Amino acid sequence: MDSFNLVAHEPRMLVLTDEKTFEEMKELAWNKKTAAFGGLKNLLSRPKPEDINITHSEKQYKPFWHAVCSTHFEYKRKCEFTVKISDPIVQKVIVCGEEKAIDPQRNIKLSRIEHCLESTTKEIFIDAYSENEDDFSRYITMPARELGQTEELNEGDNIVVPVKVKAAYIVRKLLSEMIKPIDADEILDETVKIDTLDLYFRPIYAFEYTWIPKNKQNVLEFDGITGEFYSGKVLKQKMTEIFTEDALFEIGGEVAGFIVPGAGIPVKILQESRKRKKIIDKT
Image (tube, rainbow, N blue to C red):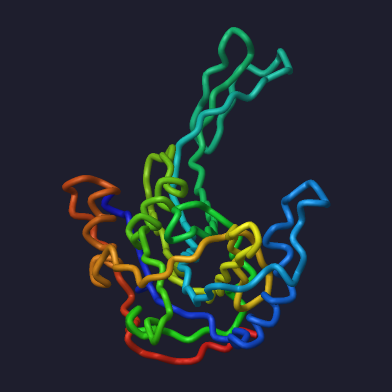
């Protein structure tokens, strides 16, 4: 495994910026208030719009990971194959100046060296709080701003949902799926690249609705970028970070130990400062 190289770009932290205003989201939430209790089957038990109020609203930032991994394996392997000598009058076969014996089944065995190249790419999206894979692909083409720290999102009453999934977990997951045993006699190059390792935060507006006559509450969450809505929950208080940012983005030592425990395989980290703030226009 001395030929193994892992090249990992420094993880980035980004926040999506092309979001709707709070006023726009509140108007949308008001127009959708009956949908908060839309699961009721009995038409007679459905609330009237005038009986529903918005009793709490909050802005959340929810995290997800986007990662892309590519592999390049180059190696040589020896392979034997059989050639049938069908003409009975043939008594000797010389290949590349070497005489090959003809066995009783009229076969000769030859060998060759195969020079092999394998290249693959895998992309994953993982909810950084629930650890579930999900399709967040629509967001990565949208404008985003690079963050130096999550505190930049914690203004006012904003609630930043903590990240439960570290960068090292994402890398180990990719490596476990991408690295496989190679049937080779000589390995020329084993390179695995973590081409992208980005932690995104997307703005979510959560609205709590109260059906006043029944004193019943339900919550809808509205995507601050797309306007989509679905059942959710309000948090009502700021949440504590689970990891320090250094621990969250550390990958070198943990990944090297995962590949070959104790072998000290070098992990090349391409340094790109996460503290550099910029607008990334991907449209």
